[in-house]
Length: 234
Image 1 (cartoon, rainbow, N blue to C red):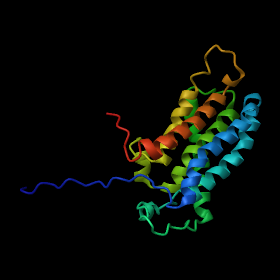
Image 2: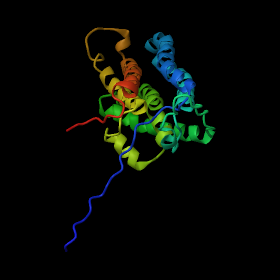
Image 3: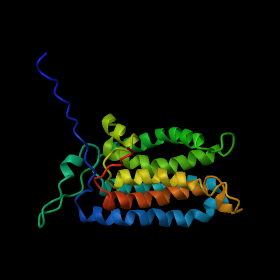
Image 4: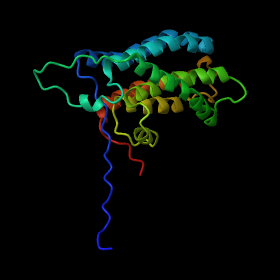
């Protein structure tokens, strides 16, 4: 055979851009502060009685994440159209008319991810025979922080999710926040076995706290410092 096979060209994905509106920019900046403020307000309850505190705080967390997604993020399949920012002086794009189905779909897949996240936490050392409600609820918080925005913008695109799971997706504030959430939750386990005899060391207070802190740092890093880059593990 004289002809050589042509290499397959794989189209690389692009980072997610915020919706080109002043409101999106403003809310994106305020969003981490809102999350941390609500979490700080409930922290003493979380330490004293984790299960009801985690359960009750799921509602404001879900509402905040939904507001962030609708105001700031392009819904499934619209990022390509919104990737280019309007030219200076041009009229900015209005918020798209998002169907509630998109939000419900993202919420459902986030809920379906909770058993997986719970299993991962157990594999990483979470109590197996005790504190099951604690682990499930902490996984629910992680799912709303990390999984919900990813599903909202990427849907169930298998190619994109392979990139995300392999940590090779181009960094943006959505992916950065997700990586930060998981890394922060992992770091949050460090204080638990230390002999400090502090009430806040009990499961899963530091895990959830690390997830929220990691989300904030990852969102900022992904949206500004590392945007468009990829995590190289070689």
